[in-house]
Structures are given as C-alpha cells and as structure tokens.
Length: 172
Length: 248
Ligand SMILES: Nc1ncnc2c1ncn2[C@@H]1O[C@H](COP(=O)(O)OP(=O)(O)O)[C@@H](O)[C@H]1O
Ligand SMILES: [Mg+2]
Image 1 (cartoon, rainbow over the protein chains, first blue to last red):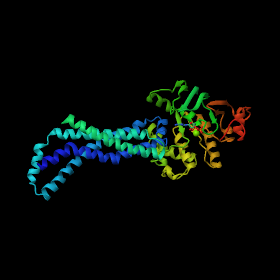
Image 2: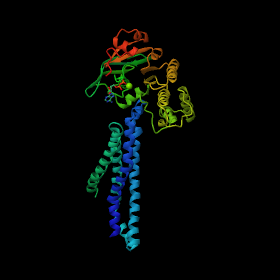
Image 3: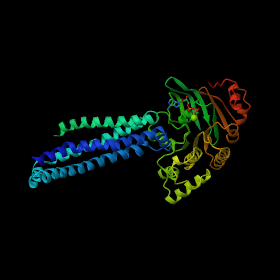
Image 4: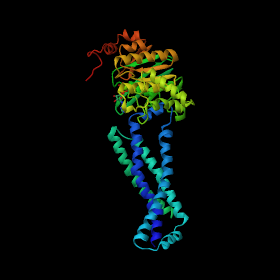
C-alpha cells in the first residue's frame, strides 16, 4: 500500500502543487519585484523609446523559463519524494523493499505522469503571468512594489490551488 | 518635422496640456522652457508615444503616432533617441552594457566595433574608466552623462533631451552644451531639449518655445524670446518673483 500511496499522491498532486508554491515564493515574487522596479524607474519606458518591445525582452523569457523549469523541478520533487518514502518506509519501518517499488509500478499509469506534467506546466504559466502582470501594474515607489509582490504571491498561490482542483477533476 | 495640434492631456482632474500647438523643425535644436511642473516632460513623452493625448494630434514626419500598433510605433521610434529626466539607466547592467545595449539590439556590429563606439561615446561625455561600474555607483551627473551617451550612440535622427544638464557642475554643463552643439553640427539631427539653463540655452538652441498653462506661449528664435514683451516670459527669463507665474 505504501508504495502506491506515496507515488500516486506525489505524482498527481503533491509534486506539482508544492513545487509550484515553492517556485511562487522564490521566483514569482522575484519576477514581480524586478518588473515592478523597472516600471517605476522608467526603465521599461526606456526600452520602449529604443523601439524594443518590453514584452519580448522582459515578459516572454520569464514565461519560457517558468514553463520549462516547473515540470523539471516537479520531476525532481517526485523522485526525491519517492526515495524519501523508501527511506522512511523501508529503512526505518521495515516495509518490504520489493513490494514498495512493485506496487508503485503496478499502480502508476502513464496518465498520472501526464497529468502531473500538464499541471506543473500550467502552474508555470500562472506564476509567470501573475508575476509579470502585478509587476507591470505596480503602484508608487518602494511600497507599491512591495504591495505588488505580496499580492502576486498570494494571488498566484490561491489560483494554483483552485486551478489544481479544477485540473484534477478534468484530468483524472 | 514633428507637429502637435490642439493636444489635450489630463491626469485625473489635473489638466496638463490644454490645446497645445507646436511645430518642431527638422535639423534644428529646439529648446522647451517653462516653470517646473508645467508639463514639459509630459510634452516630450507625447512626441515619442510614451503618453497618448486625450485629444489632438501628434505627427512625426507627416505620420500620426496616435493609437498605432506596436510594430508601427516602433518603426517610428527607430528615429528617436531619448534622455529621460531621471535618466532611467538599466540598473542591473554596467555602464558599458547600458551604452552597448542599443547597439547590440539594433545593429549587427561586431563586439570590437561596439566596444569602440561605446568607449568613444563615453569619452565624448567626459567619462573614462567607469565602464564596469553600475549606475548606483555613479554620481547624479555621471548618470546623466551615461544616459546622454546611450541616447546618442545610435546616431538617431531625432533626439529628445529631458533636462540634460540639471544637477551638473558649471563646467560639465558647458561641456555638455558644447557637445550637443558639436554633434549637432556634425550629424544635423533634430533635437528637442527641455531645459532650465537660462541664458546658456539661447546660445545652443535655434528655436525656443515657452510652455505655460498647458500651451506654447511663444515659439521663436532665442532673440524673439529674449526680447519678448510677454510678462510671463519676461518674468521667467529674469527669474523674478513678481509676475503672472506664481509659486506658492
Ligand atoms: N504619470 C503621471 N500621473 C499623474 N500626473 C502626472 C504624471 N506625469 C506628470 N504628471 C503631472 O503633470 C504635471 C507636469 O509634469 P512634468 O511634465 O513632469 O513637469 P515638468 O514641466 O517639470 O517636466 C505635474 O503636475 C505632474 O504632477
Ligand atoms: Mg520634467
């Protein structure tokens, strides 16, 4: 039972969601702060006067980075989580090691992996989108950027949870 | 030629430009003077489409720049270089990278050629051996000069300067004015300079326009402005406290 429980809960839910929440705290906030500061110090206007598209120079690289890195980080999260389960279950609590991995192989289907991938991919989109949006429309001065960053993290986290619920009901 | 016709712009209830008309002739240096907070920076941002008027028209070489699609607007913006009032250097890039940035993005020059151009642009504004510093490690006047180098490095056809010499010492101020005059004589660009440098600017600009209460009060040669009979212009040039311009 242990192998199945660990693998399915990680691959379907915990992996994508917890990775996304961690990346939100670390990178989502950074995206908002960076774009917000560039906005209030007219650096984005300066880009525009050089006939460069701020969307191309600032926003799209962050989207691409988030959509590539989230699935990868999620995969790492899953693998480490599964070995963590093995360490506790097999090494500390004496579960049969063969059974742990055999159950896993039996219960996890391609669709689980696929849904985990779709989830973390779309979470990447959400993080970059809200991060950039909140930064671009930051209010005035240091406080405006600090508010935007807070709002970005809170809103992204909530939307990730809601979107996860929605995706789970559609994908599984 | 840049023309503004009947341009209105408000921020909330505050009317900043109120039916402004202005012609900026090609190949000349036009100075825009006027009290602080009258909307000189706002006017400048309209010329390059950073701000859109509430009503009225802005045309660059006969093409309207109002409500353009981004690609169209960028095609027109290729003609411009701009120095912002607060400089707006990219603060996570070094001085060298800031000045090199437009060259890297807009030209296919080799690394060596870019390096040469950047160093000579920095030398022109009197800066040496600071290429590897970051903007927050520079004094205000040095930042201004880096911004100046960045604005002119592509040899644009039209250059907008928002207070290029404010906050600089008298010698550098003189040097910057000389630099603008010399490069203008060499390349013949159109320049628009927002400035408070009176009387120095009368020596630099071929046209001077005074912005007051959202309109161009008078636009003419430096002599026209110096000999103006308009009470606001007289007061502004002499820096007197008495007159139509009331500071609270
Ligand atoms: N983005 C903005 N939002 C609201 N008000 C603005 C904005 N930009 C400028 N203003 C207002 O417009 C007026 C003109 O500003 P500005 O053009 O910066 O003056 P200056 O002539 O000193 O350059 C000021 O009263 C300023 O408060
Ligand atoms: Mg100004």
